[in-house]
Length: 227
Image (tube, rainbow, N blue to C red; front, side, top):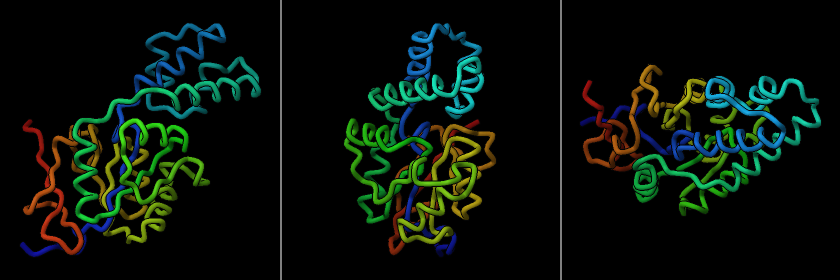
């Protein structure tokens, strides 16, 4: 099979929350526990509407709108600390996938809206010492959906956009990756318009791939769930 230039991959980049780890339980627990300390009993509807998939600023502005900026800042610090110390479950198959990519001398990066302490906790918990570059919320002026996070990661990895493959779960992350010029696969987001996988049991390293590794006959093959 003749390789298309745009299907030759020199680097793979992954979001953290929802792609490497199932972080929703830890995130919800951090907000609910902290809210109780300030006299708030959050409902399931509030959790769904204001916490899951939302930025900290959005959560603070909607749930804690009666609090002044100093109190909101303290709440945010406590939530971050709880997330930093939480135990996280890996998305199915992701560690084997990352290890497989790394073993073929393809650079691997994390591009996330999380922060260094939380990232370090996840890497330490699961022995994920495979990453050549990490871009966190503290490294950029404009976060996702802006293209800045992925452009910075490409710069750090020394890779061209057309040779970059990204795994993202959120629409904001997908916009960030594609606007930066990368190829993108969505994770558990079938309405994204991208090639979509349920988790990393749907991908494998193969000599009959959809995306070839640079200077290799191997690459990434995707299997799609039957409808």
